[in-house]
Amino acid sequence: MFRNALTPMLGLLLAVATLISAPVFAGTLPETAPEKIGLSAERLDRITQAMKADYEAGKISGAVALVARNGKIGYFQSVGMSDREKKSPMKNDTIFRIYSMSKPVTSVAVMMLYEEGKFFLSDPVSKYLPELGGLRVAVQPEGAMDGPVFNLPNEDPADAPRKPTSLADITTETARREMTIEDLLRHTAGLTYGFFGNSEVDLLYQQMGILTTEKTIEETVQKLGKLPLKLHPGETWEYSVSIDVLGRLVEVLSGQPFDVFLEERIFGPLGMVDTAFWVPDAKLDRFAQMYTPVPNREGEIQPAPAFFSRNFVNNPTHFSGGGGLVSTAADYFRFCQMMLNGGELDGQRILSRTTIELMTDNHTLDIESSLREGGYEFGLGFAVATEPGRIGVPVSRGEYNWGGAAGTKFWIDPEEEFIGIYMVQILPHTGLHFGDQFKILAYQAIAD
Image (cartoon, rainbow, N blue to C red; front, side, top):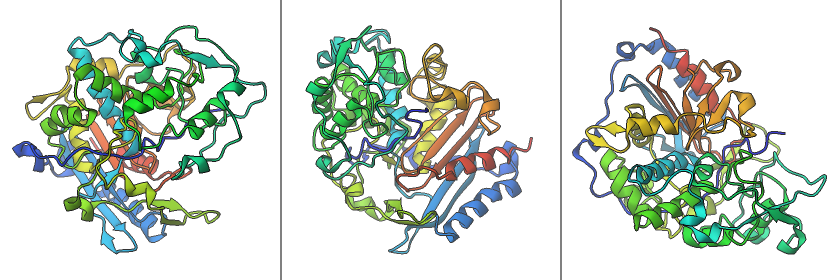
């Protein structure tokens, strides 16, 4: 069974103050005619037509898509409505909840500190976060249910689907080794998410409200330190809250709140003027409405409950590195182009080229992984294409990507110098393939 193959949602919400020190170049984007970068304008139009068809069929409220090659944007289009009920048109500068597309940003923040000699990848996490030391591992009862399931977070954790369980009900054993910082970056720390499975540990995560946003990330890590691990560290790829733990690690190693670090070290230098943990009042007219599928009516959507947005429009105290950021297609393009450039953009160096090569290599070689059959392994913050023939899209070996729980997706293909970003807001997007279709249509537009 492919456990946790879903792109998460969670790490709900949160903040950063308005971006106030964006460089002069922040508003400019390097756009060009598609043919100048080896793309067919006629074939790129298939993306627009596909988005329009989904919109007219009522499957999406609206979407934004961006395709870039050789450092230039050759396609940037928006279709439909950012808020269908208010009849607000979707625009290229619409702000989206990017959920787990926050994870690559957090991973870059961690690796910036790695470059400063703050830690080794092989260091035990407990060296810096002692509350995560000496954790035991749950022994899975024979016949226990486990994924793939998807339990939507509830406004009140007490309402989460669960069966009664407690720490006293769980048999544990000594971990074979401690989790390392590399384990956190590649999702092999033995942690879980809580809503992708029905194991005893998943249920405890739900009951204890691990993903609630009223607590700081320091308090979240303290909660995790009271629970057993789901798996032995270093043995299995399990999508988890590990990147949220890394947000706390950034705070400890840098001496700064996580939101301040991201603003001063990544968003400001890269001119990511709309990327933060919340949307200030002055930008709310650009914030997309969240939608959710209508139960038992395939292909229909409805506005999501208000709590899906509540913490994104209030300055939060919980800065979820795993899923709390909002952004625009243009901002995320700047982040992706920095990665593709080997760590630099417009004279602002974020990482070394060699560090990016390390991050986008395969770090799950000898580890059980549900990604492998689909042609991917995992690096430090990204899924990495290792067997393109298994993927079903003509990506290059070494292409890397991730997505968010509301259907947002991106990829970076170093061999083709190719970037794609797709933004939509439907949660959960399980069973919907808009972003996958976009990727196929983008690759088929390569015409050199």
